[in-house]
Length: 368
Figure 1 (cartoon, rainbow, N blue to C red):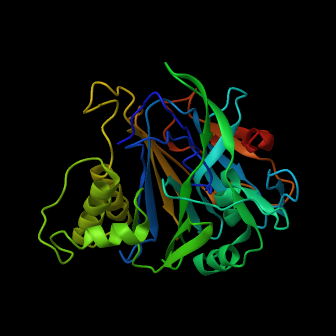
Figure 2 (cartoon, rainbow, N blue to C red):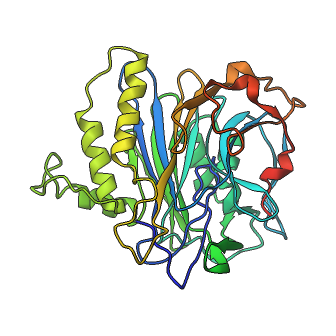
């Protein structure tokens, strides 16, 4: 669970990328978000993700076409690239300037990126001989350039760029403004059902690459999460199913329900199945088990990416509706407009919202 303490570090919890990024406070118990993937249901490769955060984040959906000129935003020797693939991403406004950061998304080839908080992340000391890539753009870089999980893993392990965490000024209700350090790990899914969990430990990328790695939450590192899982019934151990919102408990609970999920009879049941597991791993809205920490994290939205058919769904905690959009509904060619769906000011949007997207300025997604 995520708590607000006098010593706060906020951070970008990407997806973006999507990965991508959203803010978290680095303190004891400051953890949030859960990801689960279903590849062998006979209907579609689906990836769901909960975003947990104590306050409104100004969430919006974006369609980013091919051919966008990019900068890694690290100053000296910053990585440069042009987006090869279009992407549908979720972004949240986290700076007073109104700019947003991508936390989650999928590209037109069905590659999904989810960025989640991980305390032990360590990206190493900046080496300006290597092109730098802001952590806020890590997920988006993968979506822009890679078609498969294997291709993304190869890019990450190639050492052709260095992921750089940055101090970010963030205003926290009741606590003023503080500097934060982003510490995130990345989950990847592709159209074939392949999966990988990528974490930076002691300055080096640690890649857990296996289609059976369907669950990711937060700390500890993925290998230790796997060790913990083996203590529970159904995974070789004797412990009963845990019920708290701690990252280890959410990991076990999501793994347990994914394992027990019945094979769906149709596409609608496939969507319902993975969304039900996401809900089982969610955190109640604005409910805190500790009255001394009223800003406990809550699940504020859940995304669902369909790698098979190219649709991207989003369910906001403050809306009874699900919205979605598909790549087939947009112009993806270089030179096509960047499009945005503003959900903060339009909470009652529902269903296929492709026609509600409006032209937008991509610089809104560039971190300061």
